[in-house]
Amino acid sequence: MHENRKTGTHIVTFQQVGISGKDLYVVMPYMDGPDCSKLIEKLQRQEARELSRVGARGLLMSLGTHRLRETRTKEIKQAYLKDKILLCQMAVRSVRPLSDQGIVHNDMKWENILYGNGKTCVTDLELAKLTTEDLIKGHRLRDNPRLKAPEIVLAENEVLDWKHPQKFTITPAVDVWSLGIMFCELLLGTNPFDRDGTPFGTDIEAEIGGHRAGALNSALFDCLTDDVRQDAEVLINSMLNPDPKERITIEKVLESSLFSLVAGKEKEGKARLHRISTGTVWSGEAQRRRPLRNHQTMIGKRLKA
Image (cartoon, rainbow, N blue to C red; front, side, top):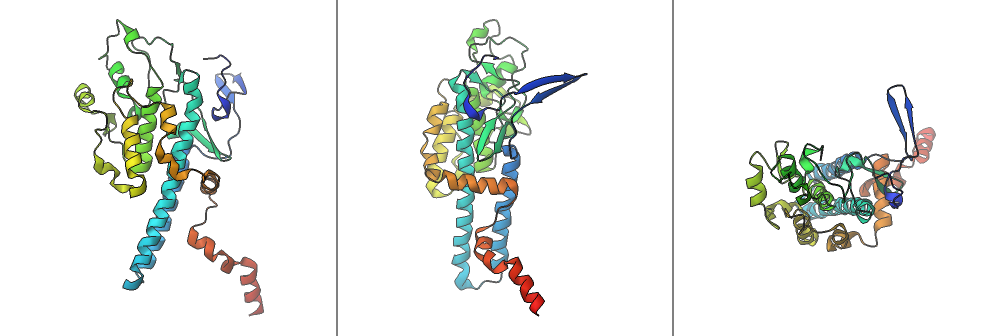
């Protein structure tokens, strides 16, 4: 893992390592922004804030303007949905260099993707593995329970035959599953396999055996707009195929038609994500009203008065 691998600019690299007493210090490049989990929290808060403004004003509207409120609500949801889809695309692009080099991150989650300067970088490769590594019984495979791939869960519960460890080879499909769950949590607001913090519940073998490719409840996708629902359902079901050999690859994920919604608008979308990450975002309504809120003009009027 310490080989000089070409992972590009999407992986946070170590610049220097130092030890002081019992403390280990690692120097890494500075990222001007939060990890993606914090960015998503800001994104969701801003979306809720804008929707609440429309709802509050709607109470004072006449019936004739009810359609206008509905239209504005759809516009806000559509704008933030594009932001979320773009963030999903950026996350996959960040993982791809690892996959290309035969590395499995093995602990993929939004907290391990940093955002800054309009790009995302993967960090925390503590549990990363090479696809050529042999896994042994008792080896720590994953920390985060909610994002574990079925093959990882089975291996940790010794369902697989550890006398023949070559039968279980960790592959980039593990990261694809984790990304699929991350997509679910961001776009659908739920993890379809979370059972009170335990993936697949107590009867793991039965539930994994019962889950088939394309078996997610279609009702989960009702929260999405019609123009992305089918593409999102096809992609996420492909990413959450229980058979790692049949699971879609990182390369195929990037080719999904779901990302056509943000094609050609990445610069605008990244600028918007940057404003949200730094707390300088303005809603569409606030941007239109901003010239009327000129601070100097208002002060001048008060002074003249």
